[in-house]
Amino acid sequence: MFASEVVSHVFGTGQSYGQERFPDIAFGPPKGGGCCGGSTDVVSLGNGGTVTFGFSGNLIVDGPGPDFIVFENAFETSPTTVFAELATVEVSQNGVDWIAFPCTATGAPYGSCAGWHPVLANPDTNILDPTDPEVAGGDAFDLADLELSFARYVRITDRPDLTGASGVFDLDAVAIANASCP
Figure 1 (spheres, rainbow, N blue to C red):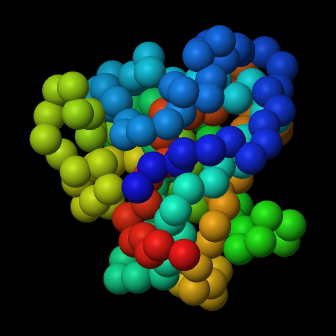
Figure 2 (tube, rainbow, N blue to C red):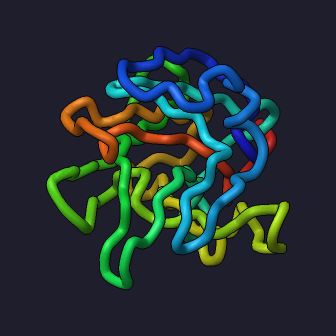
């Protein structure tokens, strides 16, 4: 139910945290830090970096509600402010043709960007289901928003227009909420 293969990746410039543990650090469930603290179980994509994941033996299918979740290490700095590091999320049925979820990085709320909702699920510290968008935290995506019935691949790209410490996406995990064996 989690990303299980890296189809391709290119790290961007700047931050390189966790890259020596890639790809293993991005597989399996998220290890969120909760509402008010970021996780260190992440890999920085670097400015403009990108990674494409496959899900061995599973398809993401359009079901009720969100169909998959992307986890970063966003956290609340106050009750109304989140430390966000944003990325654009795209999906593909064939690995060639891609459709992006709209991501507006100019200010909160950030539309369909990944990297702005705290990650709550962490199998080391709680029993929250990391595949349940209602409790897991992270940024949930619904294939119905793109009029797709399924996706085989998810591509995450750090926003190259954002720079500095808050401008580099730190990937924790990708989980399928609605899956089907192909």
